Length: 182
Image (cartoon, rainbow, N blue to C red; front, side, top):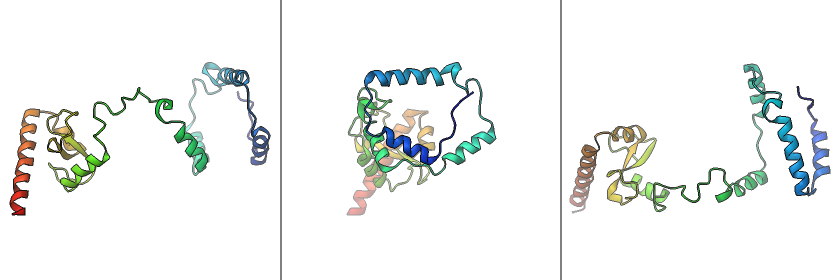
């Protein structure tokens, strides 16, 4: 059972002021870290093997509602989570299997060309660019077409048919564009 008690805002403020600017040595930080691991990890954690009741979960949720980090804290969290410091860092391969040129601007240009509509069902939400030849490294505009998520899943079967279908569709649209301009 936990011996912690709820602290008033005034107490929290005083503790914060007392600790402000303190620089702890590496030894002290490691010692505190080890103590916290003993206190809250595994079977020594007071909640080990238990779950909160639905009522307790509601109370926790209500207590956290509206709590926001201040802008300085948000900025620190962003800065400390960039690149190699991010826990999901994969050694610089985060965009694979797509080339780095496959970016928001390219996506937007494809969506604009296709009037922000799925080229199969005409939906206008949950859109994504689809690689006609299924080669994610081929980002030529003639190889990309706008599809909604549902249709993008649908075209992953019978690929030869869809490759031919979309190539003909783009070819036909280009011919109509040329005729329209003349």
